[in-house]
Amino acid sequence: MVRHRKGLELLEKDWKTLEAQQRLVLLNDLDYREKAIEECFKETHKDSRSYRSLSLVDRVIRNMLSDVNLKIDCFKTYNIKDFEDVCRKFNRIVV
Image (tube, rainbow, N blue to C red; front, side):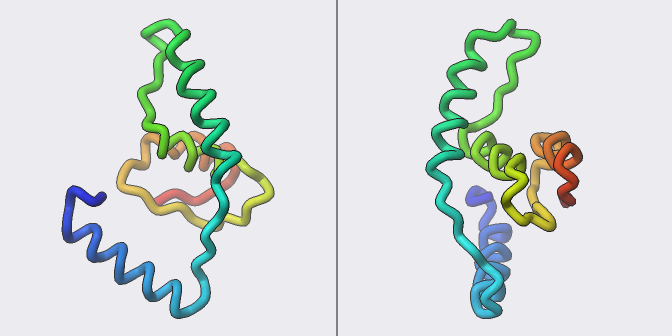
């Protein structure tokens, strides 16, 4: 997203709006990061046909979307295909 200035400007606007409305909650992602790193390393041992080239950041987000204890009503992304399966599995709306 940071490659595209317009997208970053829109994010900043939405961020500030949510912050002003006290609807923005930042989560501690340490546990999700550790799990994502393990997943990345495990991925290298898979057959090349089933290898999934997800970034570490995408894996952290997928782990957060998989956490049933997090209240996530909707997830907005520019890359729906990397998240639609996990969102569908955990009844999250992805747009």
